[in-house]
Amino acid sequence: MSSPVSTTALAWLGRSAMRAVGGVGALALVAGRTAWGLRRLERRELTRGLVQFGYGSLPLALATAALAGVIVVVQAALYIQRFGARAFLGWAAGYGVLWEFGPLLLGLIMSARIGARNAAELATLKVGGQIEGLRGIGLDPFALLVAPRVVAMEVSMLALSTFTFLVSILCEAVAAKLTLDLPVRVFFGTFAQMLSPSDLLGGVVKTGAFGLAISLVSTAVGLRAKGGARAVGEAAASAVVLGCAAIFLLDFLLTTLLSRVLA
Amino acid sequence: MKRVLTFFGAPGVMLARTVRAGAREGIPWRETLAQVHELGGRSVWLVMSGMAFFGAVLVMIANAQAKKLIGNVAVLGPAYFEMLVRELGPAVSALLTASRAGASHSAELATMSVNEQVEALEMSAGDPYADLVAPRLVAGVVGVPLLSVLGTVAATASAVLVASVALDIDGRAFMDARYVDGWDLLVGGLKVLGCGLYIPLAAAVAGLNARGGAEAVGEATTEGVVAASLGCLLIDLTVSLAFQFVRL
Image 1: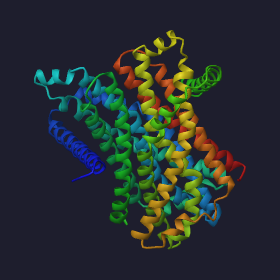
Image 2: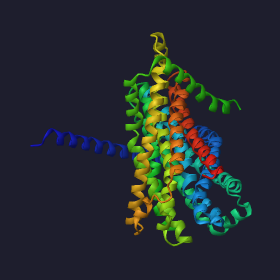
Image 3: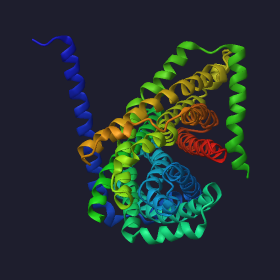
Image 4: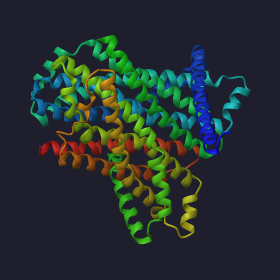
Protein backbone atom coordinates (compact mmCIF):
# COMPACT_ATOMS: atom_id res chain seq x y z
CA MET A 1 0.00 0.00 0.00
CA SER A 2 2.51 2.61 -1.05
CA SER A 3 1.56 6.00 -2.37
CA PRO A 4 2.93 7.06 -5.79
CA VAL A 5 5.33 9.56 -4.21
CA SER A 6 7.07 7.01 -2.04
CA THR A 7 7.19 4.58 -4.95
CA THR A 8 8.93 7.16 -7.12
CA ALA A 9 11.30 7.99 -4.30
CA LEU A 10 12.08 4.32 -3.79
CA ALA A 11 12.60 3.83 -7.51
CA TRP A 12 14.93 6.81 -7.62
CA LEU A 13 16.85 5.53 -4.60
CA GLY A 14 17.14 2.10 -6.17
CA ARG A 15 18.34 3.52 -9.49
CA SER A 16 20.92 5.74 -7.79
CA ALA A 17 22.15 2.84 -5.69
CA MET A 18 22.41 0.63 -8.77
CA ARG A 19 24.32 3.37 -10.60
CA ALA A 20 26.70 3.77 -7.68
CA VAL A 21 27.29 0.03 -7.44
CA GLY A 22 27.77 -0.14 -11.20
CA GLY A 23 30.24 2.76 -11.11
CA VAL A 24 32.29 1.24 -8.30
CA GLY A 25 32.22 -2.12 -10.05
CA ALA A 26 33.43 -0.60 -13.33
CA LEU A 27 36.21 1.20 -11.48
CA ALA A 28 37.30 -1.97 -9.70
CA LEU A 29 37.16 -3.87 -12.99
CA VAL A 30 39.33 -1.29 -14.76
CA ALA A 31 41.80 -1.26 -11.86
CA GLY A 32 41.99 -5.05 -11.77
CA ARG A 33 42.31 -5.49 -15.53
CA THR A 34 44.93 -2.73 -15.62
CA ALA A 35 47.02 -4.41 -12.94
CA TRP A 36 46.65 -7.67 -14.90
CA GLY A 37 47.62 -5.90 -18.13
CA LEU A 38 50.75 -4.32 -16.60
CA ARG A 39 52.85 -7.32 -17.64
CA ARG A 40 52.01 -6.88 -21.30
CA LEU A 41 52.23 -3.10 -21.30
CA GLU A 42 52.35 -1.52 -24.74
CA ARG A 43 55.66 0.38 -24.74
CA ARG A 44 54.95 2.74 -27.61
CA GLU A 45 51.63 3.82 -26.11
CA LEU A 46 53.36 4.38 -22.77
CA THR A 47 55.95 6.67 -24.36
CA ARG A 48 53.22 8.58 -26.17
CA GLY A 49 51.32 8.96 -22.89
CA LEU A 50 54.40 10.16 -21.05
CA VAL A 51 55.10 12.80 -23.69
CA GLN A 52 51.46 13.87 -23.90
CA PHE A 53 50.55 13.79 -20.20
CA GLY A 54 53.84 14.82 -18.66
CA TYR A 55 55.78 16.95 -21.09
CA GLY A 56 52.66 18.36 -22.75
CA SER A 57 51.20 19.47 -19.42
CA LEU A 58 54.39 21.09 -18.19
CA PRO A 59 53.54 24.71 -19.20
CA LEU A 60 50.04 24.43 -17.79
CA ALA A 61 51.27 22.78 -14.58
CA LEU A 62 53.96 25.42 -14.07
CA ALA A 63 51.50 28.26 -14.72
CA THR A 64 49.10 26.71 -12.20
CA ALA A 65 51.93 26.27 -9.71
CA ALA A 66 52.95 29.92 -10.02
CA LEU A 67 49.35 31.04 -9.56
CA ALA A 68 48.88 28.69 -6.61
CA GLY A 69 51.98 30.08 -4.93
CA VAL A 70 50.90 33.68 -5.30
CA ILE A 71 47.31 32.92 -4.24
CA VAL A 72 48.51 31.15 -1.09
CA VAL A 73 50.69 34.11 -0.13
CA VAL A 74 47.92 36.61 -0.78
CA GLN A 75 45.61 34.49 1.36
CA ALA A 76 48.12 33.95 4.10
CA ALA A 77 48.72 37.71 4.09
CA LEU A 78 45.24 38.14 5.57
CA TYR A 79 46.16 36.04 8.59
CA ILE A 80 49.62 37.53 8.77
CA GLN A 81 48.41 41.11 8.90
CA ARG A 82 45.75 40.24 11.50
CA PHE A 83 48.03 38.38 13.89
CA GLY A 84 51.30 40.12 13.08
CA ALA A 85 53.11 36.84 12.52
CA ARG A 86 55.14 37.90 9.51
CA ALA A 87 58.06 35.65 10.33
CA PHE A 88 55.92 32.51 10.09
CA LEU A 89 54.81 33.21 6.54
CA GLY A 90 57.47 30.96 5.02
CA TRP A 91 56.30 28.02 7.04
CA ALA A 92 52.58 28.68 6.67
CA ALA A 93 52.74 29.30 2.94
CA GLY A 94 55.05 26.35 2.34
CA TYR A 95 52.79 24.06 4.35
CA GLY A 96 49.72 25.35 2.55
CA VAL A 97 51.14 24.79 -0.91
CA LEU A 98 52.71 21.39 -0.13
CA TRP A 99 49.70 19.97 1.63
CA GLU A 100 46.71 21.55 0.02
CA PHE A 101 46.90 23.99 -2.84
CA GLY A 102 49.70 22.46 -4.88
CA PRO A 103 48.23 18.93 -5.09
CA LEU A 104 44.61 20.12 -5.26
CA LEU A 105 45.04 22.66 -8.06
CA LEU A 106 47.38 20.37 -10.01
CA GLY A 107 44.84 17.57 -9.63
CA LEU A 108 41.88 19.69 -10.76
CA ILE A 109 43.73 21.13 -13.76
CA MET A 110 45.09 17.74 -14.81
CA SER A 111 41.65 16.20 -14.36
CA ALA A 112 40.33 18.82 -16.76
CA ARG A 113 43.12 18.40 -19.26
CA ILE A 114 43.96 14.70 -19.20
CA GLY A 115 40.75 13.25 -17.78
CA ALA A 116 38.58 14.85 -20.44
CA ARG A 117 40.97 13.86 -23.21
CA ASN A 118 41.29 10.23 -22.02
CA ALA A 119 37.55 9.81 -21.71
CA ALA A 120 36.89 11.45 -25.08
CA GLU A 121 39.49 9.28 -26.85
CA LEU A 122 38.35 6.01 -25.35
CA ALA A 123 34.68 6.91 -25.83
CA THR A 124 35.35 7.65 -29.51
CA LEU A 125 36.99 4.24 -29.87
CA LYS A 126 34.15 2.55 -27.98
CA VAL A 127 31.39 4.32 -29.91
CA GLY A 128 33.13 3.56 -33.21
CA GLY A 129 33.26 -0.12 -32.33
CA GLN A 130 37.05 -0.16 -32.39
CA ILE A 131 37.32 -1.61 -28.87
CA GLU A 132 35.24 -4.60 -29.97
CA GLY A 133 37.48 -4.76 -33.02
CA LEU A 134 40.56 -5.06 -30.79
CA ARG A 135 38.91 -7.83 -28.78
CA GLY A 136 37.92 -9.52 -32.02
CA ILE A 137 41.51 -9.90 -33.17
CA GLY A 138 42.56 -11.21 -29.76
CA LEU A 139 44.15 -8.07 -28.30
CA ASP A 140 43.45 -6.91 -24.75
CA PRO A 141 42.23 -3.28 -24.82
CA PHE A 142 43.21 -2.87 -21.17
CA ALA A 143 46.84 -3.82 -21.76
CA LEU A 144 46.90 -1.82 -24.97
CA LEU A 145 44.97 1.34 -24.10
CA VAL A 146 44.27 1.61 -20.39
CA ALA A 147 47.36 0.32 -18.58
CA PRO A 148 49.80 2.59 -20.49
CA ARG A 149 47.62 5.59 -19.70
CA VAL A 150 47.42 4.77 -16.00
CA VAL A 151 51.17 4.22 -15.72
CA ALA A 152 51.99 7.32 -17.79
CA MET A 153 49.61 9.44 -15.72
CA GLU A 154 51.07 8.21 -12.45
CA VAL A 155 54.67 8.84 -13.51
CA SER A 156 53.76 12.23 -15.00
CA MET A 157 51.91 13.39 -11.89
CA LEU A 158 54.78 12.42 -9.59
CA ALA A 159 57.30 14.14 -11.86
CA LEU A 160 55.13 17.23 -12.28
CA SER A 161 54.54 17.48 -8.54
CA THR A 162 58.25 18.10 -7.86
CA PHE A 163 58.40 20.83 -10.51
CA THR A 164 55.20 22.45 -9.33
CA PHE A 165 56.32 22.45 -5.70
CA LEU A 166 59.63 24.06 -6.62
CA VAL A 167 58.03 26.71 -8.82
CA SER A 168 55.24 27.55 -6.40
CA ILE A 169 57.63 27.93 -3.48
CA LEU A 170 59.89 30.23 -5.51
CA CYS A 171 56.83 32.25 -6.58
CA GLU A 172 55.72 32.43 -2.96
CA ALA A 173 59.05 33.89 -1.91
CA VAL A 174 58.87 36.51 -4.67
CA ALA A 175 55.22 37.32 -3.91
CA ALA A 176 55.99 37.67 -0.19
CA LYS A 177 58.77 40.10 -1.04
CA LEU A 178 56.55 42.15 -3.35
CA THR A 179 53.27 42.24 -1.42
CA LEU A 180 54.37 42.02 2.23
CA ASP A 181 57.94 43.27 1.85
CA LEU A 182 59.21 40.14 3.60
CA PRO A 183 62.91 39.44 2.90
CA VAL A 184 63.50 36.22 0.96
CA ARG A 185 66.06 35.15 3.57
CA VAL A 186 63.45 35.30 6.37
CA PHE A 187 60.94 33.44 4.19
CA PHE A 188 63.27 30.53 3.55
CA GLY A 189 64.58 30.64 7.12
CA THR A 190 61.29 29.59 8.73
CA PHE A 191 60.55 27.44 5.71
CA ALA A 192 63.63 25.31 6.26
CA GLN A 193 63.42 25.40 10.04
CA MET A 194 59.81 24.38 10.59
CA LEU A 195 59.06 22.11 7.65
CA SER A 196 60.21 18.51 7.76
CA PRO A 197 60.72 16.04 4.89
CA SER A 198 57.55 14.27 6.00
CA ASP A 199 55.54 17.39 5.06
CA LEU A 200 56.88 17.11 1.53
CA LEU A 201 55.97 13.42 1.52
CA GLY A 202 52.34 14.28 2.28
CA GLY A 203 52.07 16.41 -0.85
CA VAL A 204 53.70 13.79 -3.06
CA VAL A 205 51.44 11.01 -1.73
CA LYS A 206 48.37 13.17 -2.37
CA THR A 207 49.45 14.04 -5.93
CA GLY A 208 50.13 10.38 -6.69
CA ALA A 209 46.71 9.34 -5.39
CA PHE A 210 45.03 12.06 -7.47
CA GLY A 211 46.87 10.89 -10.59
CA LEU A 212 45.71 7.31 -10.06
CA ALA A 213 42.14 8.46 -9.44
CA ILE A 214 42.04 10.68 -12.55
CA SER A 215 43.37 8.01 -14.89
CA LEU A 216 41.16 5.21 -13.53
CA VAL A 217 37.99 7.30 -13.44
CA SER A 218 38.47 8.80 -16.90
CA THR A 219 39.27 5.49 -18.61
CA ALA A 220 36.36 3.74 -16.87
CA VAL A 221 33.98 6.51 -17.94
CA GLY A 222 35.32 6.42 -21.50
CA LEU A 223 34.91 2.66 -21.80
CA ARG A 224 31.32 2.83 -20.54
CA ALA A 225 30.23 5.30 -23.24
CA LYS A 226 27.31 4.18 -25.38
CA GLY A 227 25.57 5.91 -28.27
CA GLY A 228 26.70 8.37 -30.91
CA ALA A 229 28.81 11.50 -31.04
CA ARG A 230 26.85 12.98 -28.19
CA ALA A 231 28.02 10.21 -25.85
CA VAL A 232 31.61 11.28 -26.48
CA GLY A 233 30.99 14.80 -25.23
CA GLU A 234 29.00 13.48 -22.30
CA ALA A 235 31.77 11.05 -21.37
CA ALA A 236 34.34 13.87 -21.45
CA ALA A 237 32.20 16.09 -19.24
CA SER A 238 31.33 13.40 -16.72
CA ALA A 239 34.96 12.26 -16.54
CA VAL A 240 35.90 15.79 -15.44
CA VAL A 241 33.09 15.94 -12.89
CA LEU A 242 33.73 12.49 -11.42
CA GLY A 243 37.47 13.19 -11.42
CA CYS A 244 36.95 16.40 -9.45
CA ALA A 245 34.62 14.63 -7.02
CA ALA A 246 37.14 11.81 -6.52
CA ILE A 247 39.91 14.35 -5.92
CA PHE A 248 37.96 16.21 -3.25
CA LEU A 249 36.99 12.97 -1.50
CA LEU A 250 40.57 11.66 -1.58
CA ASP A 251 41.85 15.06 -0.45
CA PHE A 252 39.74 14.92 2.69
CA LEU A 253 40.53 11.27 3.45
CA LEU A 254 44.27 11.66 2.86
CA THR A 255 44.57 14.90 4.85
CA THR A 256 42.88 13.26 7.82
CA LEU A 257 44.88 10.07 7.48
CA LEU A 258 48.30 11.53 6.67
CA SER A 259 48.21 14.19 9.38
CA ARG A 260 47.69 11.35 11.89
CA VAL A 261 50.35 9.08 10.40
CA LEU A 262 53.03 11.70 9.83
CA ALA A 263 52.47 13.74 12.99
CA MET B 1 53.01 34.62 -28.05
CA LYS B 2 50.22 33.89 -30.49
CA ARG B 3 48.67 31.48 -28.01
CA VAL B 4 48.82 34.07 -25.23
CA LEU B 5 47.15 36.66 -27.46
CA THR B 6 44.46 34.15 -28.44
CA PHE B 7 43.90 33.20 -24.81
CA PHE B 8 43.12 36.77 -23.82
CA GLY B 9 41.80 38.12 -27.11
CA ALA B 10 39.33 35.49 -28.30
CA PRO B 11 37.01 35.68 -25.24
CA GLY B 12 37.05 39.48 -25.52
CA VAL B 13 35.99 39.37 -29.17
CA MET B 14 33.38 36.74 -28.28
CA LEU B 15 32.00 39.00 -25.52
CA ALA B 16 31.78 42.02 -27.83
CA ARG B 17 30.02 40.04 -30.56
CA THR B 18 27.63 38.40 -28.13
CA VAL B 19 26.66 41.68 -26.49
CA ARG B 20 26.11 43.30 -29.88
CA ALA B 21 24.11 40.35 -31.22
CA GLY B 22 22.12 40.07 -27.99
CA ALA B 23 21.23 43.77 -28.08
CA ARG B 24 20.22 43.56 -31.73
CA GLU B 25 18.36 40.24 -31.78
CA GLY B 26 17.15 39.97 -28.20
CA ILE B 27 17.95 37.03 -25.94
CA PRO B 28 15.74 33.92 -26.05
CA TRP B 29 14.48 33.69 -22.49
CA ARG B 30 13.31 30.10 -22.63
CA GLU B 31 16.79 28.96 -23.67
CA THR B 32 18.32 31.18 -20.97
CA LEU B 33 16.23 29.47 -18.31
CA ALA B 34 17.27 26.06 -19.66
CA GLN B 35 20.92 27.15 -19.46
CA VAL B 36 20.51 28.45 -15.90
CA HIS B 37 19.24 24.98 -15.02
CA GLU B 38 22.09 23.34 -16.94
CA LEU B 39 24.84 25.48 -15.41
CA GLY B 40 23.35 26.11 -11.99
CA GLY B 41 21.00 23.28 -11.19
CA ARG B 42 23.18 20.48 -12.47
CA SER B 43 26.38 21.83 -10.90
CA VAL B 44 24.91 22.49 -7.49
CA TRP B 45 25.65 19.08 -5.97
CA LEU B 46 29.18 19.01 -7.29
CA VAL B 47 29.91 22.50 -5.97
CA MET B 48 28.28 21.93 -2.59
CA SER B 49 29.85 18.53 -1.92
CA GLY B 50 33.24 19.67 -3.23
CA MET B 51 33.17 22.80 -1.09
CA ALA B 52 32.05 20.80 1.95
CA PHE B 53 35.09 18.52 1.65
CA PHE B 54 37.30 21.54 0.98
CA GLY B 55 36.04 23.35 4.09
CA ALA B 56 36.66 20.25 6.19
CA VAL B 57 40.21 19.90 4.83
CA LEU B 58 40.93 23.57 5.54
CA VAL B 59 39.94 23.15 9.17
CA MET B 60 42.11 20.06 9.53
CA ILE B 61 45.06 21.96 8.08
CA ALA B 62 44.38 25.06 10.18
CA ASN B 63 44.32 22.74 13.18
CA ALA B 64 47.70 21.25 12.25
CA GLN B 65 49.17 24.75 11.83
CA ALA B 66 47.59 26.13 14.99
CA LYS B 67 48.94 23.26 17.09
CA LYS B 68 52.47 24.40 16.24
CA LEU B 69 51.92 28.11 16.89
CA ILE B 70 49.02 29.05 19.14
CA GLY B 71 47.55 25.82 20.43
CA ASN B 72 43.90 26.73 19.87
CA VAL B 73 42.47 26.53 16.38
CA ALA B 74 39.23 28.31 17.37
CA VAL B 75 41.21 31.59 17.51
CA LEU B 76 41.60 31.35 13.74
CA GLY B 77 37.83 31.05 13.24
CA PRO B 78 36.94 34.64 12.27
CA ALA B 79 39.96 34.94 9.98
CA TYR B 80 39.02 31.60 8.42
CA PHE B 81 35.54 32.88 7.69
CA GLU B 82 36.88 36.07 6.14
CA MET B 83 39.26 34.08 3.95
CA LEU B 84 36.41 31.82 2.86
CA VAL B 85 34.15 34.74 1.92
CA ARG B 86 36.88 36.76 0.26
CA GLU B 87 39.19 34.26 -1.41
CA LEU B 88 38.40 30.57 -1.27
CA GLY B 89 34.62 30.46 -1.56
CA PRO B 90 34.57 32.34 -4.87
CA ALA B 91 37.77 30.78 -6.24
CA VAL B 92 37.08 27.10 -5.59
CA SER B 93 33.35 27.29 -6.39
CA ALA B 94 34.16 29.00 -9.69
CA LEU B 95 36.84 26.41 -10.45
CA LEU B 96 34.38 23.57 -9.86
CA THR B 97 31.72 25.26 -11.96
CA ALA B 98 34.31 25.85 -14.66
CA SER B 99 35.06 22.16 -14.90
CA ARG B 100 31.42 21.05 -14.84
CA ALA B 101 29.80 23.75 -16.95
CA GLY B 102 32.85 24.49 -19.11
CA ALA B 103 33.01 20.84 -20.15
CA SER B 104 29.32 20.51 -20.93
CA HIS B 105 29.09 23.89 -22.74
CA SER B 106 32.09 23.29 -24.94
CA ALA B 107 31.11 19.67 -25.67
CA GLU B 108 27.61 20.77 -26.65
CA LEU B 109 28.72 23.67 -28.83
CA ALA B 110 31.48 21.59 -30.41
CA THR B 111 29.01 18.82 -31.27
CA MET B 112 26.75 21.43 -32.85
CA SER B 113 29.49 23.00 -34.92
CA VAL B 114 30.97 19.64 -35.97
CA ASN B 115 27.54 18.46 -37.13
CA GLU B 116 27.10 21.76 -38.99
CA GLN B 117 24.10 22.65 -36.88
CA VAL B 118 25.55 26.11 -36.30
CA GLU B 119 25.64 26.66 -40.07
CA ALA B 120 22.06 25.40 -40.27
CA LEU B 121 21.08 27.94 -37.62
CA GLU B 122 22.71 30.72 -39.61
CA MET B 123 20.97 29.55 -42.77
CA SER B 124 17.60 29.86 -41.06
CA ALA B 125 18.38 33.48 -40.17
CA GLY B 126 19.34 32.75 -36.56
CA ASP B 127 22.38 34.33 -34.96
CA PRO B 128 24.56 31.80 -33.12
CA TYR B 129 25.89 34.52 -30.81
CA ALA B 130 22.44 35.68 -29.76
CA ASP B 131 20.80 32.24 -29.75
CA LEU B 132 23.60 30.06 -28.35
CA VAL B 133 26.22 32.16 -26.56
CA ALA B 134 24.11 34.92 -24.99
CA PRO B 135 21.84 32.54 -22.96
CA ARG B 136 24.92 30.75 -21.62
CA LEU B 137 26.50 34.08 -20.76
CA VAL B 138 23.44 35.23 -18.82
CA ALA B 139 23.29 31.83 -17.09
CA GLY B 140 26.96 32.17 -16.08
CA VAL B 141 26.57 35.68 -14.68
CA VAL B 142 23.48 34.64 -12.69
CA GLY B 143 24.54 31.09 -11.82
CA VAL B 144 28.16 31.33 -10.71
CA PRO B 145 27.51 33.91 -7.93
CA LEU B 146 24.59 31.85 -6.62
CA LEU B 147 26.65 28.67 -6.73
CA SER B 148 29.50 30.33 -4.88
CA VAL B 149 27.13 31.50 -2.12
CA LEU B 150 25.85 27.93 -1.76
CA GLY B 151 29.41 26.58 -1.86
CA THR B 152 30.56 28.99 0.85
CA VAL B 153 27.60 27.98 3.01
CA ALA B 154 28.46 24.30 2.50
CA ALA B 155 32.14 24.88 3.36
CA THR B 156 31.21 26.81 6.50
CA ALA B 157 28.74 24.18 7.64
CA SER B 158 31.19 21.34 7.17
CA ALA B 159 33.92 23.34 8.93
CA VAL B 160 31.63 23.83 11.93
CA LEU B 161 30.74 20.16 11.91
CA VAL B 162 34.33 18.91 11.62
CA ALA B 163 35.58 21.33 14.26
CA SER B 164 32.95 20.35 16.80
CA VAL B 165 32.87 16.60 16.09
CA ALA B 166 36.43 15.67 15.08
CA LEU B 167 38.48 18.37 16.83
CA ASP B 168 36.20 18.71 19.85
CA ILE B 169 36.13 22.53 20.00
CA ASP B 170 33.36 25.09 19.64
CA GLY B 171 32.78 24.97 15.92
CA ARG B 172 30.69 28.12 15.89
CA ALA B 173 33.93 30.12 15.93
CA PHE B 174 34.24 29.22 12.25
CA MET B 175 31.15 31.16 11.29
CA ASP B 176 32.13 34.32 13.15
CA ALA B 177 31.75 37.24 10.72
CA ARG B 178 33.70 39.70 12.91
CA TYR B 179 36.31 40.49 10.25
CA VAL B 180 34.04 40.40 7.20
CA ASP B 181 33.28 43.87 5.86
CA GLY B 182 31.94 45.36 2.65
CA TRP B 183 35.33 45.21 0.97
CA ASP B 184 35.53 41.43 1.43
CA LEU B 185 32.10 41.06 -0.12
CA LEU B 186 33.17 43.34 -2.98
CA VAL B 187 36.33 41.30 -3.65
CA GLY B 188 34.37 38.04 -3.58
CA GLY B 189 31.59 39.49 -5.73
CA LEU B 190 33.99 40.83 -8.35
CA LYS B 191 35.66 37.43 -8.58
CA VAL B 192 32.47 35.45 -9.08
CA LEU B 193 31.12 37.96 -11.60
CA GLY B 194 34.37 37.83 -13.57
CA CYS B 195 34.41 34.04 -13.52
CA GLY B 196 30.71 33.82 -14.38
CA LEU B 197 31.36 36.00 -17.41
CA TYR B 198 34.53 34.18 -18.40
CA ILE B 199 33.50 30.51 -18.14
CA PRO B 200 30.80 30.56 -20.88
CA LEU B 201 33.00 32.73 -23.11
CA ALA B 202 35.97 30.37 -22.91
CA ALA B 203 33.71 27.37 -23.50
CA ALA B 204 32.06 29.09 -26.47
CA VAL B 205 35.42 30.00 -28.04
CA ALA B 206 36.60 26.39 -27.78
CA GLY B 207 33.27 24.90 -28.85
CA LEU B 208 32.44 27.09 -31.84
CA ASN B 209 35.95 26.76 -33.27
CA ALA B 210 35.81 22.94 -33.32
CA ARG B 211 36.23 21.45 -36.79
CA GLY B 212 36.46 17.82 -37.78
CA GLY B 213 34.89 14.67 -36.42
CA ALA B 214 34.14 13.16 -33.05
CA GLU B 215 37.72 13.63 -31.92
CA ALA B 216 37.38 17.39 -32.39
CA VAL B 217 34.60 17.34 -29.80
CA GLY B 218 36.92 15.76 -27.24
CA GLU B 219 39.71 18.19 -28.09
CA ALA B 220 37.37 21.18 -27.83
CA THR B 221 36.04 19.94 -24.47
CA THR B 222 39.55 19.68 -23.07
CA GLU B 223 40.48 23.06 -24.43
CA GLY B 224 37.32 24.69 -23.05
CA VAL B 225 37.76 23.22 -19.57
CA VAL B 226 41.44 24.13 -19.37
CA ALA B 227 40.86 27.68 -20.61
CA ALA B 228 37.92 28.17 -18.22
CA SER B 229 39.80 26.84 -15.16
CA LEU B 230 42.99 28.73 -15.89
CA GLY B 231 41.05 31.90 -16.64
CA CYS B 232 39.19 31.64 -13.33
CA LEU B 233 42.47 31.25 -11.43
CA LEU B 234 43.90 34.28 -13.25
CA ILE B 235 40.80 36.40 -12.55
CA ASP B 236 40.89 35.47 -8.84
CA LEU B 237 44.56 36.29 -8.64
CA THR B 238 44.19 39.62 -10.45
CA VAL B 239 41.35 40.79 -8.21
CA SER B 240 43.15 39.62 -5.03
CA LEU B 241 46.41 41.27 -6.02
CA ALA B 242 44.71 44.51 -7.05
CA PHE B 243 43.01 44.81 -3.66
CA GLN B 244 46.16 43.67 -1.85
CA PHE B 245 48.16 46.48 -3.45
CA VAL B 246 45.71 49.18 -2.43
CA ARG B 247 45.54 47.58 1.06
CA LEU B 248 41.80 47.12 1.31
